[in-house]
Amino acid sequence: MKADVTLAGISTDRLYPLPQQEEIARHLPGRPPVSVVESVSGHDGFLLEIGQVGRIVRSALDAET
Image: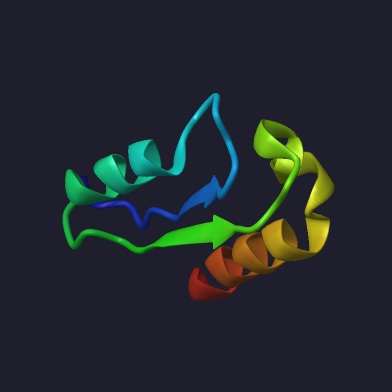
């Protein structure tokens, strides 16, 4: 894979647990870091923690320019 990859996981997500995101990172070239969104809301944290998720998305978009 030659594309830049941004990985993120929600600290309390039981549907897609953080260790799964870390496993994906281990299998990608360069082992990109996994950003952790801290949330008590489980999987829905990606919808509710807009400040944290927004910073991750903004960082990924800024890296492209």
